[in-house]
Length: 345
Image 1 (cartoon, rainbow, N blue to C red):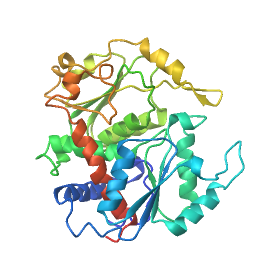
Image 2 (cartoon, helix red, strand yellow):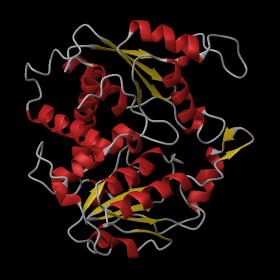
Image 3 (cartoon, rainbow, N blue to C red):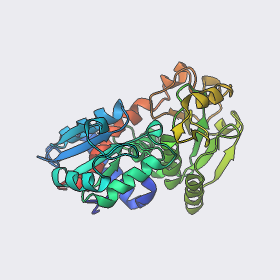
């Protein structure tokens, strides 16, 4: 599978065979984490990590990934660079991308909801870099998509329904019921992780249920993609406004807070307003009673978990929680994507 030089901005833009190639390599890298055949793939090569927003797992996992592949990850922040914006003079995206391409083997960009004036502007920035760069652009989370998280999600679920760590079975996910449920929360989260979860679940043949209060619909384009993916796989899609019904027969429960489509007003992200709206919707926390209605389902979350609001501690830290497996898989899928798109493999 030749993916050298390929951008990774959203999983929907890679074929299922390309996704499987990366996932199969990730599983091999997990089983044989420090095997010599992997440790020199990025030898003497640098990966630029361009963070508009801070992170915990993203920076840690990408830096570990580059190191374990024999390369180096360099941390960059826009405030430390002289870049042109709508209000300041500086270097254009074209110039920055072309110069960075002369230095690095790939460029990762992380830009989330509070760093953009309108929904989609972060994703547009990544695509502008991809237009001018001659090395791969890796989406480390933008305001629409989080492909590395989606890959870690599906690998983790397939491990639970497969033979365990490093031995996922993706065929066993076909026909399984995936519940993506809005949840109470204080963090006013963007759509990137939940939208990627919808996409990846539907690509692998899972039935998708989205449960959310009225007024919390997700991106219509992403919903259309998910419906089309489900139809292509003979799976079902439904959207409901009931906080209870989606748990019945669910195999994977993904409980997370997200904002309304009105989160941007006057060129700014309205965090306080969204937090107030969220607080008005009670009764959407995933708890043991609701998980008992599932078909021996697992709980999944991209983290950080808003414990006590999105989910109870009993579930998040319980025996059917996949959160730490999924978090670990960020390292392995990112190693695989980096190896395939910018390595000597």
